[in-house]
Image 1 (cartoon, rainbow over the protein chains, first blue to last red):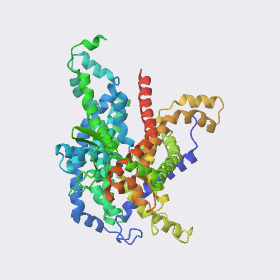
Image 2: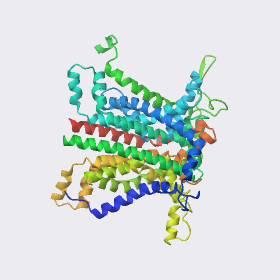
Image 3: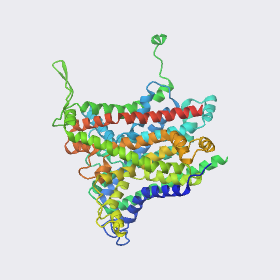
Image 4: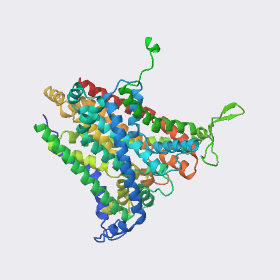
Length: 271
Length: 306
């Protein structure tokens, strides 16, 4: 095997990863800056973290967002696993291409399109049925599930395709019903993928500005909406502190999950 | 033919598995989009909802009025056409930049030793998981006139006056490439890492130089990954709202922003719906390309399994 040129490789990777990480690092460093001028370093301070935890508007927005993200992740994993299983295992049915197209559309469709179309549906439903009565947690929840189901289904279907089918076939041969096989055999096997999908749906919901802008009503300001309304006008150091906490928590989760996955993988290959 | 005369059967377990998710997708994606199409033909009205109905049943006659005000305005006011063209241009440039930066990265990650590969891959996945809004916000502090980049360039004496980048198109390009780069690298990496090394070795054995072997073996084989990644960058970039709003200037014309203004600032829902419909129409070919690459990935994997 011919090895790639090591100098070019190092150069490409160093430049590429610097591009990806310098903004994140600068955000974190300046969250500890003493001055509110975020562009020059005047000394080390925790004051923006203190300010963050005294900021009632941000805290209540964070509570609302965590609630919606938890609800979204749970519902998306249920619907997305179902949809992903159908995609991976039942391919010959009428409308399969429409099904596949609809399922993966939210991966690429601009979020403004998802936002306006769902809002118009809720408005039409509201005038026809008198329900839902105005926008709020429910409408944001449905909007976020619509987005997240696509990501969950992609993760789940690729995991199901990699499964060894002989286990499921053995259970079927022994007389288990297909439903029982799914819950007793398939589901435990894809559990790590389910957890990864839950976390991804949770973070996607926690990050969404556009869909929530269309689907939230007065009194339902999610964390990204609050953050966006502050930072669209310029720099806000308390948002740096928030970003640092957010990135650290997500980063630790992803690294730990990846480690577990990697160790399990190497164990499997050793056996 | 005999099927026609059979009694209706109970739905099979298979149908029970397929119908609910299909119904869900139709309800939250297909139906809402058809409503956008419908409302794009309505007229502005004062009230709730702020648009007229298309069909009216009056004195037992059904009248259907299609209002083309939105579309007429779209094609007569040059602002909209310029905005569409500019959005496509910006998305295209973003996609090309993502290919130029992302292809070498994905290539070298895929060709790294498996133990390093896992760490490198994690390095691409991590930004993808953390908040896009906050990562775009980070660029504000870097690109401003008194920001980190200008400070750095001035301190090493490369420039004397700060570069105006923040609130220009250039800042939007940087933000778009930065935000969408992982979306390009990940599918391409998945493709490159599965490539058959033996073909490349055969090319070398036959005396091909590295560059030539890359162009005639690796590049063509990786095209499905490039197309999937490019579509994951191009399509959402066209309608992007947050990035041009945070980094762009008042004259950075992007269609997501125009639609937003029509909807929220002008409260002109039919116009916003028409802008959306034309945007989707514009994205139809890339969308079909994307779906095609998804479908091909499926069939390729099925064949590989058989």
